[in-house]
Image (cartoon, rainbow, N blue to C red; front, side):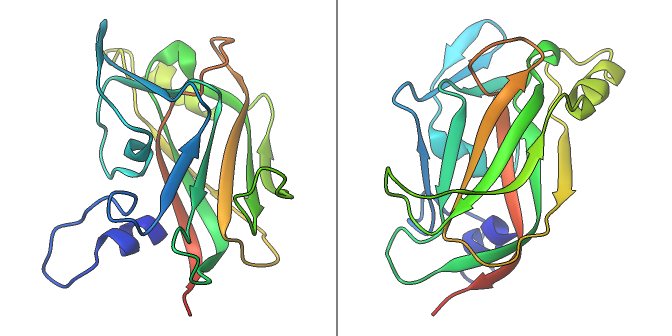
Length: 183
């Protein structure tokens, strides 16, 4: 995926989170993120959504959305997405059941967003979590095909609903696949 590519900046080096390298930027609401191991709150950052592995038991965007900017240096980087992957943020009852993936050319507050994929009453994560009887904090990854007609600079995931009925969006992983365009 694009974030794997961005984080593999040199041959032979270990992968690094592209948001921590300044190659991508993660934005979220003013209430930030909450991360827990069991019942203990731990330190986490919004950039952790791009990590390759699970960072804690549960990870939530408190305002129900996040944005990934592929071009924080304003160099004309865009991506024509073909697939995306989401990883559940933990907790059987906190699984996403409704969300929207959107693309835009801007990170400005008045940006126009194009819906690239939408899910309503989707129990895919919930079904997988229910099958994981012994695991209190399942972190399943699922991917979806996109039919985007063009490239975008920024991508936003907005929660519409979850099984728990909370405003918090429990997502602990995101990846995009497609054609990355760099000037």
